[in-house]
Length: 198
Image (cartoon, rainbow, N blue to C red; front, side):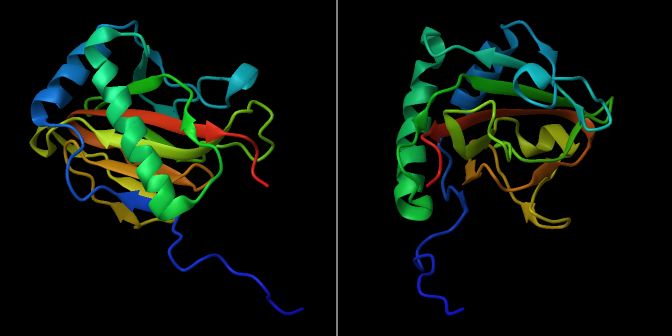
């Protein structure tokens, strides 16, 4: 069998912003607002299969509604930069923000972590819309925590996130967050979804 078509040379499945998308003051505001919503334990499984498994995921999270006035700027900026990342790196059809933002807290006193997982299930039975691009923004200052490295695809493939920067990546890629060993790490996660892949 001969290969007749390949992915275009410009296409990639991960992109880290060169400059912060949020200022330190905006990060502080998002942390404050994220903490104002009812926290819950991070679950795994998706949809009706959600379950608590502290060996895989140990974190606290809350959901920030679209209509929450103090953080509406956050959605606008993420939508703008996510669509730009899609044009420049992914080339997926019909992507838009269609889920609320997840505000996550990882606590070093408990060794909070999130083991290997994908954001888009293989069967996609809980989606449409299909999650196509995941975006993680580090909200905390690096001096406020230790550990908590984000790894993509394989052990040791570390993504060097800095405060206010965003990492966009294809939702079907495996990733994990190593245990936070000291302090508190806050992050924001959103997903860009759309029609099923063709």
